[in-house]
Length: 142
Length: 125
Image 1 (cartoon, rainbow over the protein chains, first blue to last red):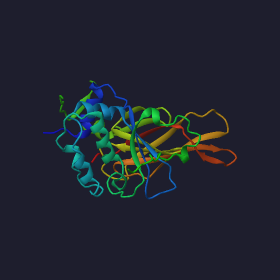
Image 2 (cartoon, chains in turn yellow, brown):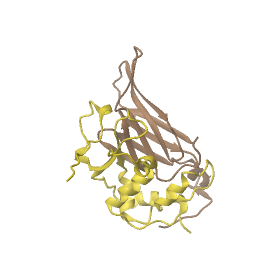
Image 3 (tube, rainbow over the protein chains, first blue to last red):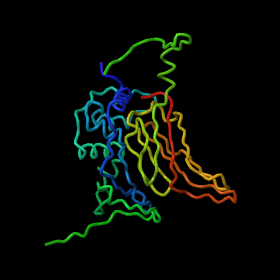
Image 4 (cartoon, one colour):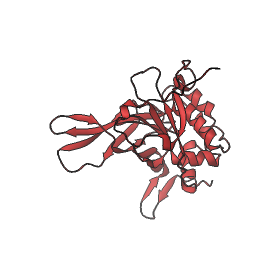
């Protein structure tokens, strides 16, 4: 019998050292043009569990559970845990889990609205935090 | 992973049903600072810095209902006439957001990047 995800997380927290990710996910909301860029920070205990394996459920269970009504059984707590991921795979998983599909799947515009960047590229000066936008790389055509 | 199955827990004098411990425990917590990131956490997959003073925590293991118990608190302050606030907003079974900032005795409120602590209680999905 598979233990509940919450129990697996408790076990993982007890035996694994937290892992601070070297990356952040920058993203903008295409449905709110006035909103500044958001910065997703991976949780260190979650990252440790992702890199160790046999704790987290398949990402598709989370996506299916988004449509499950309140109080109804969800699939992800008792799904078969997946193997260890690389940090890159873990970040892709986190994007699909914690960021709206309207940003990572459905957006069809030309603007870059999501980027995975090293922590060092996030400004430490937050004076103008509500003006942050993702820098658009210049594209050249031959 | 080993599992101890028991209906009750006792210290030799007092006995409680295991369900009290399992059902009454905190299901998720996080301490977050907008500049320094996550310092303490459990059952949290990420925190998103949405904008000045606005954050969003995502649970790894979802709660059973949207109306679960959530608590949030801003840390700091200086025993003066400006106080820190933390308001929980936009709660779902898988995440919740917060607004934090300062509230002054002259009636001026402003969002700001306080350190905040959050817990969730209730039944898991």
